[in-house]
Image 1 (cartoon, helix red, strand yellow):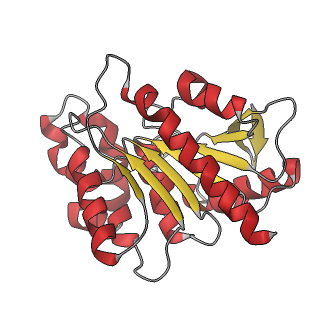
Image 2 (cartoon, rainbow, N blue to C red):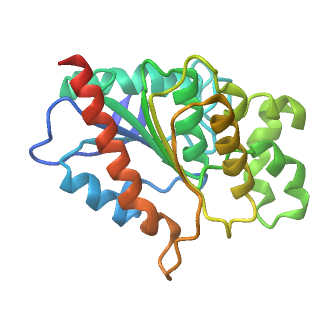
Length: 246
């Protein structure tokens, strides 16, 4: 673990990292680091990619003051400014060589941050992204995990105000990350509809993307089932971006 701007950040660093590439992994609402997801961890290790994992609690990676995070810096600016600067300082990696990857809360964060900063993060991958967090706010009283969305209520105070700030509403028809991939399990009753709606919007706008929205089967966790496809997409996107600079 390292300190970045006074906040904790995990660093998964291979002994001989490949030059010019790095990943920022955005954790889910439970705060699980990359090390808790062995399929993803092993694939990035095999690719010799350093992975930074900022810890922000239940911040939803938003660009607004979030309870329990920081009084002077938003979670989004922490990633875009402080974490990005640390990646450059330690490994000399600058955009477009930094990819965003996330799961759950972090999955929507990876997409949302990439939509808002496509020149900085042109490569983004999301697993089970919690895109429609406004719907979770509305349904919180009927959900066993309803308390997980308290920070959203504190930040927005209104479901419609939250909806206006979701990833789908930040898709720009003329300015988008060149490489985006998201995987969602049709069996996920809470979040799959949001991924399908995002796919439909991107298709309608003619924006290239890689949707993984079909059942994958098997008894493994969904992350394990789609990890290879998502990581390959990320690595291929970084390859393309490196050639753009050559």
